[in-house]
Length: 520
Ligand SMILES: [Zn+2]
Image 1 (spheres, rainbow, N blue to C red):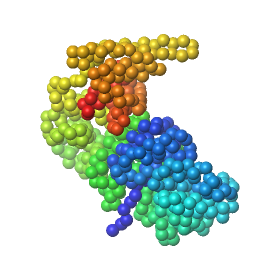
Image 2: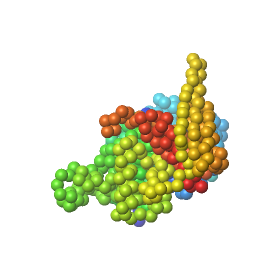
Image 3: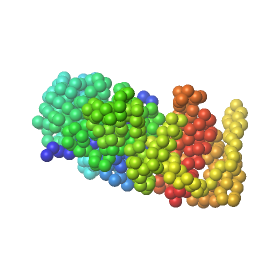
Image 4: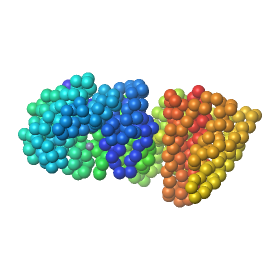
């Protein structure tokens, strides 16, 4: 039997290097949690030496329970000419208190001479000292051998010497990196096979997509002996991105018979891909392999049965296996599978043919056509499902009216919000200030509801995202607001859409409070 493949996700570190991607601390924790649920083995949370946000991530990560993932901190081998125990950056890596530490070091003599400007032997010592020191502290060490393929092509003996130094020092994984992303699958396979023949440590592969081969190179490396793949969700990363785990996972699972995540996770692949895009505030790529909206779209026009027959013969896998669905113009089954999965997760048991399932699907489609998006707003989806299943759901409260105003001077501005909220026969009328309109509205709403529902005082916003949607049904631009809330132990997302940002925000806030009360 072939050895099990380890998946190592670096969305939160290498992925966050991508232009236009910026994760807040809450985003990072939420993504990490989702990756853990999905069954990813390693999650690289960031680089503790680079910024306080990453350090805080590790502090919070320590307090959380991870189902199966092991959290990794990323950093460099020690600086030149200094003992490893005096290296500030190495100290911060240890302070992150992760079970796994990933160290990057130099393979390519060009870099050793021109970038590091050290003697080749000193580079070997930097690799060995750093790994041995961290191993002595009981950590699992992944060694990322930067520029493995470029370095090996220039000076094979030296490249091998760096990997052997890492192995001898106790590295658990030696991960060959195509840092510049320009190698071909045949080269990656040949060099991996060479390393495999001379090293006993587990081999990994870390690829970039500059020539469009990141996934192909990772698969080629795997065929040649690697057992550990590093990549990012949706292929986020510097320049043209990293190896896309969303393509790697089904390839391993469905085509190579080398399972890498639990079988139950695979139908949630599309959802994971969309979730991370939504958190990153990036439009989901409709042409993304496996999970894109058009990945299994067929233009029809002939009889439905014929299309079904033709479609099967033109699809490389059954789309449902990765949570996607076939789309044909005459009978769009869009989204039902996902909704059933979601309904089941929320405790509603439905069969695919139940009229309720159809009603929910059409409601979701109708709202999505208006700009709503439920991938990262599971609480709003739950309320929507409840609304369809229960004609007359008992609402905990209603907002009778609200008002937001703003005063500004040359130096500062203050927003004030008032809301009138009805709980049963009681009406609460409150006012609150805020540094922005949504902040003020949230304060007023929370203080009104807090009088009837003291437990809502624990609920707070952890994140707020706004996206301008253009070109929906030819109307004026709309705003989608995505809010993330927490009560200290759980987190949930809600969504609102309107031409008016305040109205959209209020919808998302109201859903958030309603959901908090519903869940108890
Ligand atoms: Zn990289």
